[in-house]
Image (cartoon, rainbow, N blue to C red; front, side, top):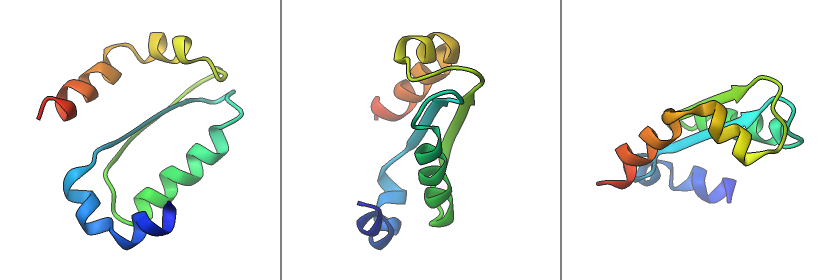
Length: 79
């Protein structure tokens, strides 16, 4: 998928918004960091947040992120 995204970056950049939220204690934090770095390297605009101390717990992530996650959804999916 990364190669396809890179190949189609110009088209994707016009149509897709990215938001990543991950806890620093999540076992997926490193892959998320790498993906964020990759997206930035191909010029994608990415909202990225790391939440200190949280593990792989979606409820805790949404509770800590507050309305910012919902604001992203409202801004990008309402169009």
